[in-house]
Length: 352
Ligand SMILES: Nc1ncnc2c1ncn2[C@@H]1O[C@H](COP(=O)(O)OP(=O)(O)OP(=O)(O)O)[C@@H](O)[C@H]1O
Ligand SMILES: [Mg+2]
Image 1 (cartoon, rainbow, N blue to C red):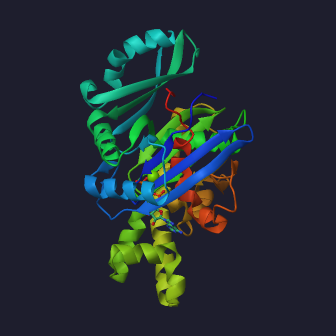
Image 2 (cartoon, rainbow, N blue to C red):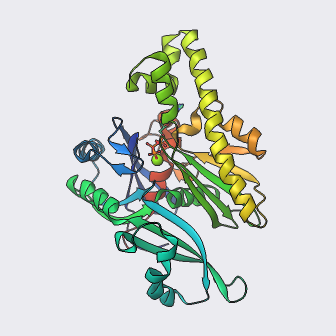
Image 3 (cartoon, rainbow, N blue to C red):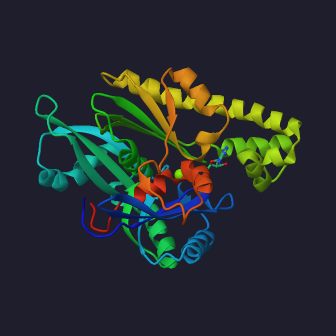
């Protein structure tokens, strides 16, 4: 465990901003704050900030309402501006790798190397024939700078910039651990992005971001029922029960099935690719998080198609929660959306 206090986990998603504060003690990890603020559509698109002032205002509001005093935050980024690749390099030390990576990375990245920040982690120090497996992460500097500027305007200091895919991996490790000799897939189903992270023996072996998500269902509901974005979101998240119109309910179920089918087909395509390019690619379980994991029929379709048990992740499973301070029912309902920010809140200022 690193020293210093936990950073404030700040997850700026395309449909909402989430904040999580944790405190670690000898007893374990305690929840200090969790809250979220909805964003209008188009404020954040595929991981890129489009409307700085809207995002800044919402972060300020979250800080004020929750009386957050910790100004050091950990940010997550995702989408087209992030590249994650597993590559094979000649065996070398971490220092040698740090020296050569800028040059090595060039051939694996579709952007100009000058425009990205590059980070590396040795996964497997020895594979065969003097080679080692390395995880290469590159993120566009202009996108990172946009995040830093927006967060700075809201009065926070970013001390860690992480990638969503690894944040929910950390969240998962806290709550479930990684079983040895098992390959599991973690899938974060967001509004506009689906992040897939396949983990063997606790180590990432495959990642893929799909530029699709639950917003596809929102758009379908808007179109078919001729309603606004806000109304569609309301229907989608169970609001139709109050409307008590069974025709609307049936229509939403039908649209959910259609969208689930499309999303599951894309996910399967990624798994097919994984299976075709990896030895021992046998998945034993799939764990899902993200708001869109609640889209009716999605996990059922996924289980049927991939033929592997699918389980919903509870990001608060191993987190100590004071029931006098939190509405546990409300927290449980927001739990799928909390995954990334909880993983970010595990980070500390002096982390790598
Ligand atoms: N009960 C529910 N049923 C169906 N969909 C839901 C439910 N609750 C939330 N969602 C959907 O989940 C999505 C939000 O999930 P999440 O917060 O994980 O996404 P995000 O982080 O804002 O987006 P992204 O990471 O893709 O940019 C929205 O599309 C929302 O409509
Ligand atoms: Mg998200």
